[in-house]
Amino acid sequence: MENKEMAKLERANFGSRLGVILATAGSAVGLGNVWRFPYMTGENGGAVFIIIYVACVLLLGIPCMVSEFIVGRHGQSNTARAFRKMSGGNGWSVIGYMGVLTGFLITGYYAVVAGWCLQYIWASLIGHMQGSPEYFQTYFAELSSDPVKPVLWTVIILGLTYLIIEHGVRDGIEKASKLMMPTLFILLLIIVGAACMLPNAEKGVEFMLKPDFTKINSDVFLAALGQSFYSLSIAMGCLCTYASYFSKQTNLTNSAVQIGVIDCLVAILAGFMIFPAAFSVGVSPDSGPSLIFITLPNVFQQAFSAIPMLGYVISLLFFVLLSLAALTSLMSLHEVSTAFFQEELMITRKKAALIVTIATAVIGAFCSLSLGAVGDSMTFFGKTLFDWFDFVTGQIFLPIVGFLTCIFIGWFVPHKVVHDEFTNWGTLRGRFFHLYIFLVKYVCPLAILFIFLHQLGLLK
Ligand code: PHE
Image 1: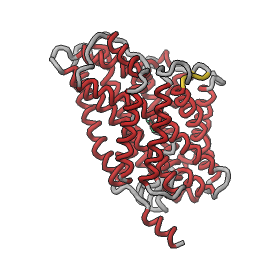
Image 2: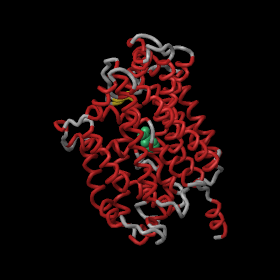
Image 3: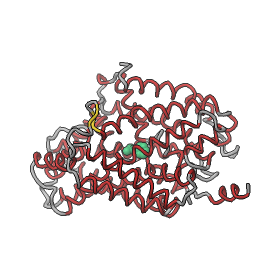
Image 4: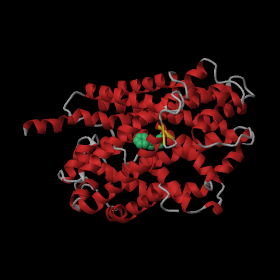
C-alpha cells in the first residue's frame, strides 16, 4: 500500500498549463494537418468542407478527446491500466490494450513518413532539391523504394524520439514541445506569408475558401469526420497517456477546446501555405504523399524562382516544419508504448523506451521495404505492408477504439465518476456536462459507426 501511494506521488506530470497544451497539440498537429487536410478541403467543396470539419471537431472530436482525458487522468497510468482501473478490471479493459496496440503499430509506419521528411531536409541542404518536375517524381520513387536510405532515416527519427522520451515527461516531452511547437508556428507563418505574396496567390486562397455547395454529400461528411478524429490523435492511446500526466487542476474541457482550435488553425494555415504557391505556378495540387514529396518541392522552386535561393530556403523551411510536426506526433505515439512497458513490466523508463524504439524500428523497416525494395514479397491482397498498417490502424482500430470508448464512458462508467473528473471534483462549474454526456452517449458512437461502415464499403 505504502509503495502504491509513493508511486502515485512520484508519478511524472507536466509542469505547466502551457506544457499540457503544447505537448498535446504537438500530438494532434502532424502530417495529417499539413498534407491531408488542405487537399481534402480543395477536393470537398472548400469553405463548406472547412465548416463541416470544424463542426466535427467541436461536436464529436472534442467530446471524444475529453473522454480519453477522463480515463487517462483518472487512471494516472498507461492507457491499458487506465481502462482496467476505470472498468474495475472487467471486459472493458480490452479497449485500453487495443489503444496501446494501435499506438504501437502506427509508430513504425508513421516514422517511415517522418523519415522521408528528414531525407528531404538533408537533400535540400546538399543541393539535391533542384530540377524538373520529372526529377522530383523520380527522386521520390527512388527514395521510397530504396532498401537502405529510408530505413536509415526511420531509425534516425526513432532514435531522436528515443532521446526525447528517455528524458521523461517534463525534461523530455514537455521541454521538447515547448521548443518545437513555437518554432513550427513561426515557420508556418513565414511560409504562409511568402506564399500569399506570390502573384496569383488569391486563386489558391479562393480554391480553399470558395464554398461549393454542390460538393456536399454524405462522403464529404464522413471524410471530414474521419479526418477530424485522425487529426486530433483520437483512439491511439496518446491522449489518454498524456492525460495521465495532467494535474488535478487541469481543466479538461478547456484544454480539449484549445487543442482542437490549434489543430484546426494549423490545418487551415497549411492550406494557405500550399495552395497559393501551387496556383501561382499553375500546378494542380495532388493528393497523398505525392503532394508534399513530389509536387511541393517543385512548386516552391518555381514559385520563388524570381529571387535566387528563396525557393530553396522555403523548401528547406517547409521540410523542417513537417519534420517538427511529425516528431511531436511521434513522441506521443512512442510514449503510449513506453508508458505501457515501463509500468506493466515494471522496468525503467530508459529500458522501456529502448524496447519500443527497437521494436517500432523493425516494424518501420519492414513497412519501408514493402514499398518496392523487396519487390512484391511484402504485398498481400494487393496492399503493401505499409498500406496494411495504415488501413488496419486508421480504418479498423481507430473507429473501434473510439466507438468503444464513447460507449464505455457514456453508458457504463458511473456518471458521478465522470462528473468528478469533468469538474475537477466540483471545483469547476461543468456547464456543458449534460451536453457532453449526450454527445458521448448517442451522437459520437453513431457518427463513428457510420464512418466505420462507410470505410468498409458497407454503407454508401
Ligand atoms: N494527429 C496526427 C496528425 O495529424 C496523427 C496522429 C494520430 C498522431 C494518432 C498520433 C496519434 O498527423
